[in-house]
Length: 279
Image (cartoon, rainbow, N blue to C red; front, side, top):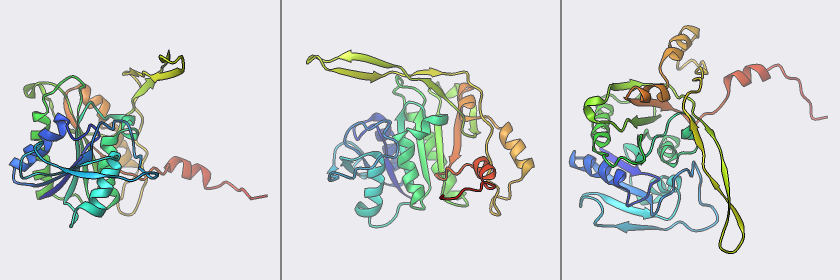
């Protein structure tokens, strides 16, 4: 398979090197297009007011891997690859392996997840991989799982392009409880801005959020369509599924399907009887 790989930790990160080299060793055609430096927490940001530059790099990955370092955001990288650098669309867009988890509401800020979502926007399945630790440097178990997941999807294609958000617990392989299909959970942070003074006497602020681990996990809001054929009974069992936040605590590898459609079904139901006028 032809796999496009990006990330938000930059071209020199150990996570993307481990992922790209592992998949190349498995016989896949690998193209890497990722930021030339760390671009974490950029979300779905795009570069609009200055040029985007991409330079081909050598000596970082295995010789069979074609790699570019891009001056833009993770989303820029994937858009540039799909729109200019690649002659044909890839079979999948992969992102990661991120240094740190992307669970629950983290996905709204994550450059890793946004890079994979760019593939879905262009009708290509995307997978975001994250290792749930900022200190661990053992990305190989996550890369090995990525290889197995890609092989499984090749043999069992998804019914339509979607984003799979994968988080791998940073524990020894023998302590991983298994693989869990999960729904998106909720993580809350207490945002604390530290006020500081620079050497020139100017005030600046440093964001230092504190994670609240034990928060109630939300129900899954269903959008019932003729395609999904989901009804009230389906909603019951779906809401009984673990969230990604819950499953990671139990040392499961989590796979959470995500979409870019943020329409609020409850809101549409509530607003449908509104009678507003322009005057």
